Length: 213
Image (cartoon, rainbow, N blue to C red; front, side):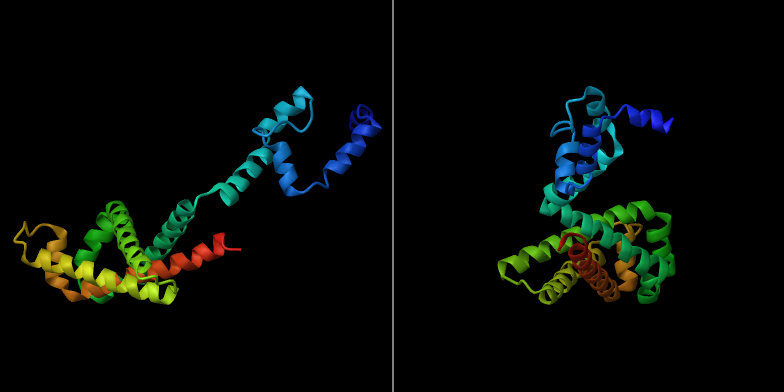
């Protein structure tokens, strides 16, 4: 069966096929990409190449490495970093309980409301880092070490402000953060500083590993 199929291929086509196997990845992408045009003028081959897995893979590869914006790359690095640090620090090392000495509150926030707390912290930590990077840009701070210091100081300021507010706002005591800051106090601020700084350091390392050549 294999020999019968080979007889349908002319010597010229076989030579062209062998030569095409030596083209570069970029040229292969340009030829296989349905948006760039077919490999040949053959209608069946054009249909096959359009839906082939190799064409799809190459298309995704080049988009992710050449057309992805800087903000997309930063968000990918941030989300990976946030997830990694949260799993290690919270669910493996149990640092919130060690620092706060309030296992019931930690269980309520990180276990009973795991999805809600994950999404809330994802946005909150991103806000801390964004404010920190804005301040670092204003003062022309380019060193990652000094940027980490800025992240820690900004986190301390914002978290301390929340602590003072929740301790004296006179709101419903059933609100979690009122109970959290009243019982834990400044240790909650220290925990936030360590967590956000760790996420930022890990984010920089991941970003350089994935997107810096």
